Image (cartoon, rainbow, N blue to C red; front, side, top):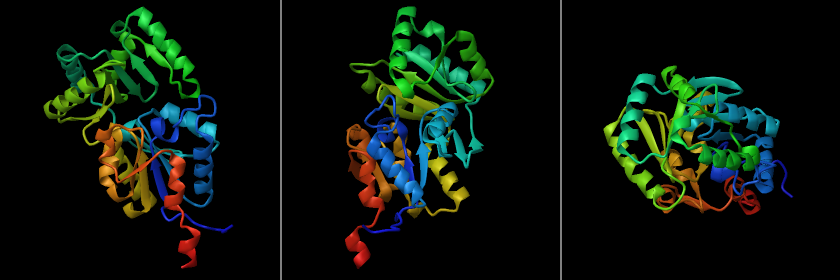
Length: 291
C-alpha cells in the first residue's frame, strides 16, 4: 500500500441530492462508499465543499450528522459558509419578487410555489394545495427520513417571508409526472428573458429562482478566493440544471452523474455513476508515482 498519497485536486465541490446522497440512504444519509471516499479525502488534506440547493438549517443538520465543520454553498449560491462562518448571503428582493410571482402564477401552470428561507426551511402557501394533497405531501416528506425538510403551510407566513426579504431561493413546481418537466423547461426559458433581475434554473419538474448573479459557480468562485485556492485545483460534480453553471465555469474538471438528464450531462466533461468514482481521478495511481 502506498502511504501519504495526497489528492491531486485540493477541493471537491459536490452537489447533495442525486449526487453525494445517491443512492439514497434514508437513515445514514450518505452511502457508505461515498462517505468512505469523503472521509479519506478530508483526512488527506482536501477540502470538501457542499454545493446545494438546500437551506442553511439543513446544512447545519448535515454538519452534525458528519461530526465535522463542512463548508457550504447553499440555496444555489445564495449563501456561503466557510469555517462555520457566514461570509456571503443574497436574498430575493421582496417587492420585485412578489410582483414576478403573481404574474407567473397567473400566466403559467405552476402547481406549487415554494420558498427556502433564512430562518425557516420551506414555506408553501396553504391555499396553493388542497388539504388532501397536503396530507400526501406530508407523508411523502416524512418517509424521506434524514433527507426531510419541515414544511410550513401558511399563506400569511409565505407573504411575510417575501416582504421581509429573508428568502434565499424560491421554487415553482409544475407537477410530478407526465409533461411537467418539459413544461418547466419551456417556462424557464420565458422567465429568463422576461425577468433579468432574477436567476432561473430548470430542475426537472421545477424551476429554481435566486437573485440575478446568484449561482453555484459564483458561490464557488467566492469560496476559492477566500481560501486562496486556484480554480485549476477544484473538481465539481452534480446532476441537475442548477449544476450547469459550475460545469461550465470549471469545464475541464466537471463530472455529471450518469442518471442525469441528457440536457444536463452535455455540459460536463466526464460522466460517473457514484461520487466515490472520483477517487481514481483525484488520487494519483501507483504507476504515476513510480514515474
